[in-house]
Length: 187
Image 1 (cartoon, rainbow, N blue to C red):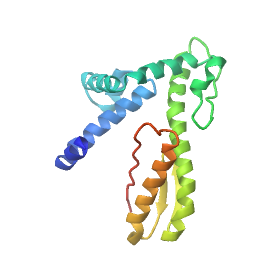
Image 2: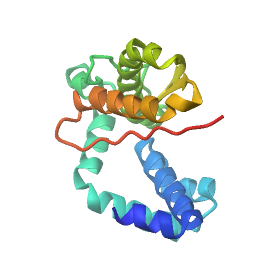
Image 3: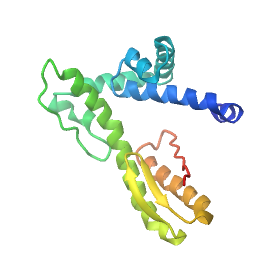
Image 4: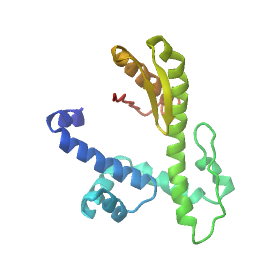
């Protein structure tokens, strides 16, 4: 609610802030350090560190999870940590002293990326079952997005249906955590 109000009052600043937060969060999830995140976002290291600190303060168990994923790399008995809720397993390569950090980052990226792709695919299957009644069709699914073409007069109904299906697919996994999906409309 606070972000929505801020976005309405100052959309450009909200967009910049969202990009900084998103880049910092994604960088953290994929094992990038604060200096690398700051460089890629073209923001001062202090700003990226501030966002990172606020993120870990808001989600203290996230760092514990990240460390547990890195620990699981190379340990078959801990493979459950590298398995998505739908059962897809991280394919480990040969782990050496030189590549351990790289493989750990790949494992950190694997779990959220694969889970979001699975959520999107499940939602896309359900969306595909329903779009025909709106004169629409699914034209693709990429990572965490489903793309649909539809007549302009049906855009609001299709957008709502897509948000509902994405939310429903995510709720199977995130039943204790709010999940929001937003339909974006383009030409």
